Figure 1 (tube, rainbow, N blue to C red):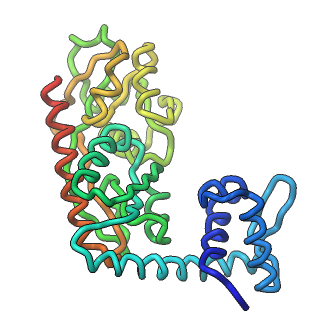
Figure 2 (tube, rainbow, N blue to C red):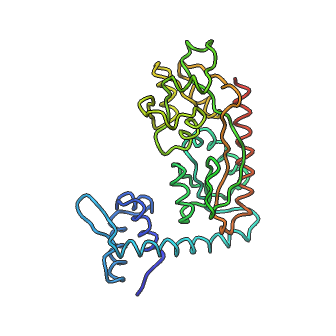
Figure 3 (spheres, rainbow, N blue to C red):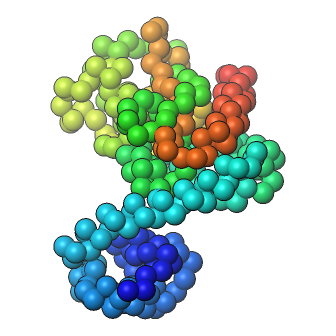
Length: 304
């Protein structure tokens, strides 16, 4: 049996994307080339890994078991490269960095600029998605580290807290002079929230003690930008993280107010596998992320 690491990477990509075109794009090869490699892999194994029809690609029962083994193999292969990286004082080459959507637009430009200046030979590859997806990709070896809201409470992961930020209230500009509502008062308003799966949604609900409230009071959106624009249109009120204020409220007819104490906040940090040989270098990266966040938050305070 002659299996190659390249074939296993292509197989892993197809498992992840469940689509030949998207898997090929992620591997920077043509779709026919990827299809050929998968076919050769199946021929080497003597059995099919995927069920294919005109619209779907599914793992066979053998393919599902094979995928579990491949995941462990590829993580070990990646950690061999990480081990070589760990012998150097600074990171060089690829850094696979994950970021949640409620941080990425506001902090990533500063992070990437500072990381590039500190590590000229670093190739930063960013993945933006929800926390659950980032955790899975770190555990499977697809990402080196991620910037998320803490805690994630995964025994296999190291968590490093970097900074905290408050949530602020966004309401129509015409309401700017009204008293700031209490959490109890917010429960009586139409609160606009991010859709299910965003940790920021859960944090906002927790502050308002609204987990048990009927979902009919809510209007869910996929981004903070949409939330703010809906507030500007008079549809309701929302909460957004402090670092998003400058970007999201710049062109919207809204007013921003600090909530009453105890003010809601979140802790942002970095996570990575406890077994990652690059722990020392990732700690250095974490310090740069910490400094970047402080700079963004300081500029935000000055602009209020």
